Length: 88
Image 1 (cartoon, rainbow, N blue to C red):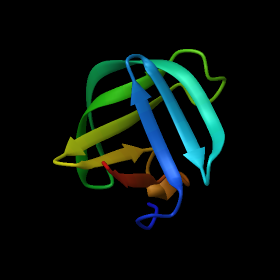
Image 2: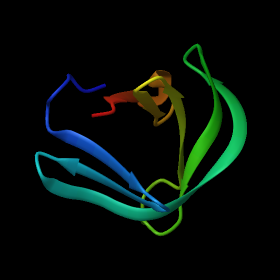
Image 3: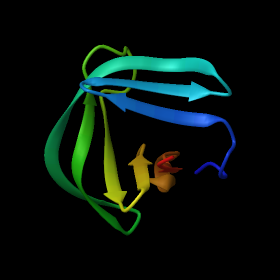
């Protein structure tokens, strides 16, 4: 994950998705949400973001709880990880 206020921002708007790091755009793509249940590193996810035109990994699992978004890039055992974001 990322510590609070570190400049790493995820922005969703309609069907577009952007990731910024300290103001620099790292990823911009369109997406759709699909239902799929999977347990990864002890957390059960039931939805995933499918990137439609990014040229990057095709999907990531996510979980929203209150104002917190967790995006899982795969199991820690295979060099994956989870990033946690807070809504502003």
